[in-house]
Length: 265
Image (cartoon, rainbow, N blue to C red; front, side, top):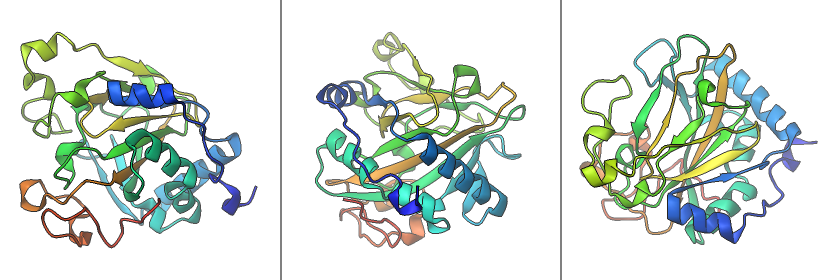
């Protein structure tokens, strides 16, 4: 299969999945990618990890415990075809009900065996320069992911609890479960989504989520695409700095746009 043929066909997301996303703040989508597409993305990601030509850092504080690489699409045609694909855009449109979508950024999240760390319970929205909630992420497994390999865990319905302060991925300072009310703590029932390669979860920017350290003997590779639907504006100085802050072209209160925020729908 040629690169241009990858990721083009639509994915038939159901009304039940849309309802689950809006109720729970996340939804699972199985078999979104073919085995050939997974192989192509694995090869592209491995090459990107060798080059390190995109923004990259260790979210846990050093040593590639949680390797994060941003805007891989700028450096690889396969990763760009995936990030801007009509398949993913179509799913995001259905989940959000938005006609138009922009890519905020893509990212790889890699947990190697041994030195890996947990990704603490957090929301994504506090780290983003958006005023309104509504942005969403597609977390795609490029390897079979079980709990001990760092599968995603969610608190259903937590996207309705509001926005909390950002937490440190290095473990410094208060954690998310220190900030919630007793009523919310009573609803703290994590759901683990173990995924085969080529399946994914989508989650709302306010949904609480977490992954354990990778304690297996195999690397866990995931690709995350983050999309901006209609109705999301730039928060400017109300939010923390983001690695892409200097690419934002919006003024405060205007739709969140930037020189690298590609329109995908």
